[in-house]
Amino acid sequence: MVQENKGNFLRYVQLTTTFGITTALRIYILGILAGGWLDIKFGTSPWFMLVGVLLAIFLSFKFLLEQLSRVNKDTRNKNTKER
Image 1 (tube, rainbow, N blue to C red):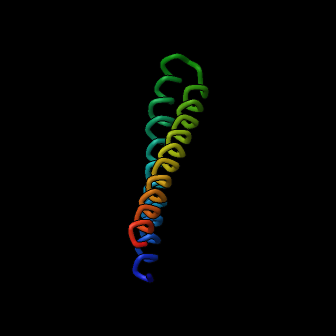
Image 2: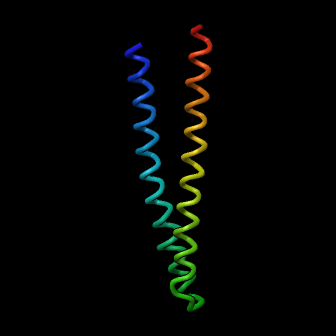
Image 3: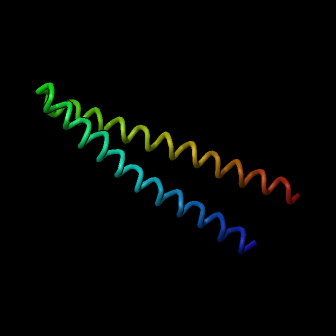
């Protein structure tokens, strides 16, 4: 039982770490680089950068929710098999 809880804890730690890193990378790539480049090209500062940052945040939370539902589904399946 303790080992199973430790495994679940580590899965959530991994998910949290992945979420943080991918969110930062998405914001940098979509918001700063791509959005900044489009703003310079079209002279629309800061609109494309803002759209890029918001898109990055949306994609990160979508990824987080998908991963959380997968972890919960795996945990439920494990608990069902043990009974």
